[in-house]
Image (cartoon, rainbow, N blue to C red; front, side):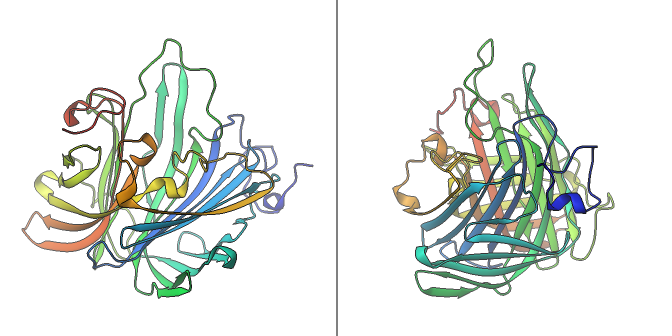
Length: 368
């Protein structure tokens, strides 16, 4: 009984039915969205959503989050996948692909949790394909995945606790990633010999009036990048190699007592520089990242839905599940000719374990 809707489309990669995704239990397939006004002070509305499928775990989960005035509302949902990967609905959260790689619709209908939304994403340019991410710990493959990233504009509305907010003209980013990374219940057997966990990740898609800037890096414990890219893409364009910044480096001022940035800079070499000014932090556990209860791929039964509210000021930033954030930021990009663009974006940060350039020496030590 492995046949599913996907088998009626010419998308097979192997002789197997679409329901089978190789042999690695950690295979996943995921959507992500965020959105914000192009101009704001950090107290304005920010939203994010995610939808994940875990074929070998037979689980699908989703989340929708709204942040405003330092408060974050998270709607979590999980269900049994029943091997049907083409069903993009988890309880009250649904994604519709209206035009592949260009237009998608996000619908949330959870009146019992006082959360509703109807949002359409329209891509500003063709998606960027990030370099394939492969990372091993000894002989074990921990990460092996591909991601596309696309900036866009939004239309529609969000309603929380009876207050409706229009998101027409909002900008932001969506991504799609698929492959292998840790999902579901933790592997009970640690590596032999034991190794200290280490993961350093910065991701900063930025929106400007006429185009988009994309930057990301994965660094090892010595600060050496094992996956890094920076690229500019005009609206309506697609990658042609001309917008690459091959010498991109970064610098961060860490907020004392945390592993969160108070300011950041990107040096694009002869092509210019970028100044990132964080305004507010969105906590990624709202989308399930390292969430103690709603982590990706966990089994909550046939269907489970829950609302979660918190204020950012009440969270202990030293806890590992509070370290992963996207900082909504004002961004100034000055090009090689001295012309400055002012825009907005997110500066995502996850720094676990040692990282020499940042002064981090153990798993969870913080900036002095």
